[in-house]
Length: 131
Image (cartoon, rainbow, N blue to C red; front, side, top):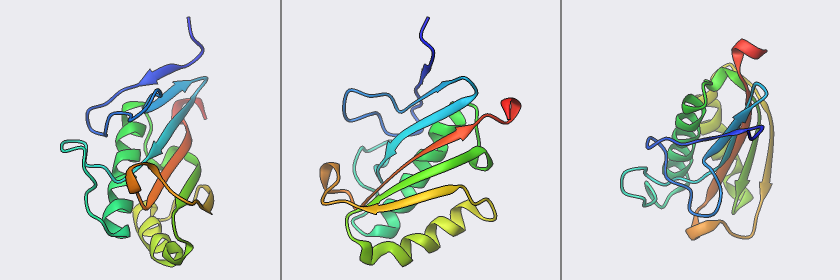
């Protein structure tokens, strides 16, 4: 029996490579990097940072929920931006989304993201019942 179990939900886009949307085990939920893809159409929600960031966060939340967690269970977030000029705008979107909950976080600039995305977000959460 594997030590982690894959997470699969149709409320977030299917993985675009050989990986799971997320995995859960030992009281933790690991959410793979989420781009701003609409889970129904498979296309980016929009070309602008705000549209992609909001959709990526919604996708992240859907995978968390499928893994038995909520935003308040998130312990750490990693964010990948293709342009650090978007940092301030992203911060506001992120703050509005997470509210008073403030997970540990890293934001790094990358040269490119899959399919020309502008932002990718992944996280680790601790299941409340196991905290």
